[in-house]
Image (cartoon, rainbow, N blue to C red; front, side):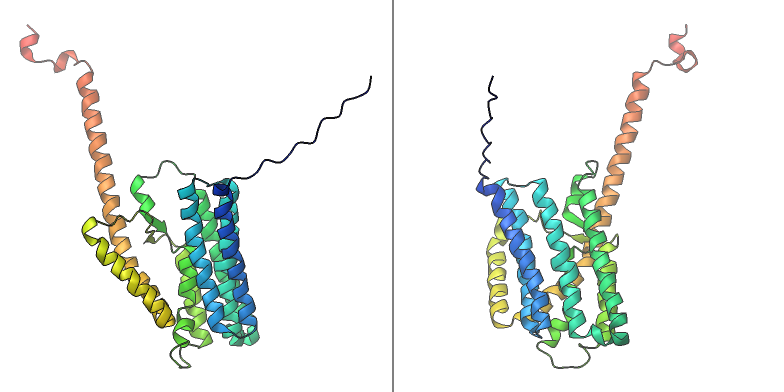
Length: 286
């Protein structure tokens, strides 16, 4: 009896809502790695611009995935790899080629590069594992634990961005940039809360002001890009103490609510239990 051959299975077409976020992630990855090439060529403005473009597409891919309902485990893993290369490796390499190679014949500067990259990897690993924690209060979604990797990449380049407009040997000092980059790496793996801005709601009466501010921001990026980027990073640094204060306030309020709930629950349990004979009112004992 001749054996029947099964027809080959055809691959199903992937829907656009699944593919579009991954395309944006790949663009961010390529942009971040291209920053290293610009650094090798000594084109520092293009190097910083490429990392900024990578941060922009990294911000868009997650929002597009949620909008199109195309989030997937594959996309999450790809995004983490892209973030590590674009924001953990690329900015550290750019700083190394710019100024850190002068530290200890390059050895000390390379140790700083390794430390920053390791901090980024640890920060991303902690973020990915925290996603599986379903017991966190809802308000914690408004905060990150530590500085996120795109913000860390931008902050590590702060003095380089300033030096693109201000000609001073102070900002290009290898020791200053090394200490600053290590401090930013430490902030990424720290437990300090920072605003995530994912759940920001704009009141209707402030929509016009917000749109005006966005217009001014875009105008600044086109006319004075380096001053504008530096101002954004400084404003982000200023927001960290406010995030810490807001986080502590919400944490204390959550603890008070939990304590009040536990107290009312124990009172209800006590009321539900029958009273012991010695605890009954005297009028019922007769």
